[in-house]
Image (cartoon, rainbow, N blue to C red; front, side):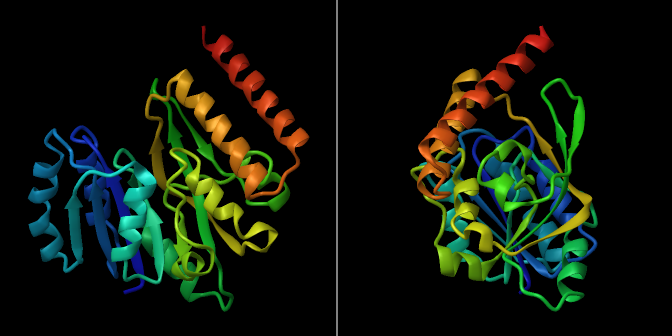
Length: 253
């Protein structure tokens, strides 16, 4: 099995069907799909069950579990334990792939002689007011370790499974910035390559001001502890992020 795609879900009845349908619509099908649900109380599980036959018809291995967890990173770690693919991606239950996404990743892997840790692409980001913009940053260590906002989107990117064996799985003490912290572990030695095309659509999920503060705090911690950025620079980045966020909020009024 070449690819494993993992979705963590919780009470996602309004969005998860579109996510699942985007997996079923892939033009390349040598992958498995895992849904790790956090014991949803809405119709999420009913929707998941209705899709089982479609995966069988397409001969795509499909597994799901539903049990309580402590957040998205514990769910992703559960998915990693079940994953049999050489490459692993994590797509949210309110995000979706374009039809040729996995094919683009497969073609890149098949046509390169180098071994990479992380392969990423451009992503369309849809805001809460339905406006959108393209996230098309290029990974550079000097930017990545300082500013999470100008680094490539994690959605839809594929991780070499060997990376987890070398650097470990997600740190569940993080609730928002754990994917960022994971990639910081390799430092400047992280081997990346980009597909300069849009492969996924990512939706803003109504992040509140309190959640924004948590993002900033967790990013500060990840940069300080894992990225080895000095305390003064972390503090400066923290302040700049707050100012920029406040300025954007004022512009929307």
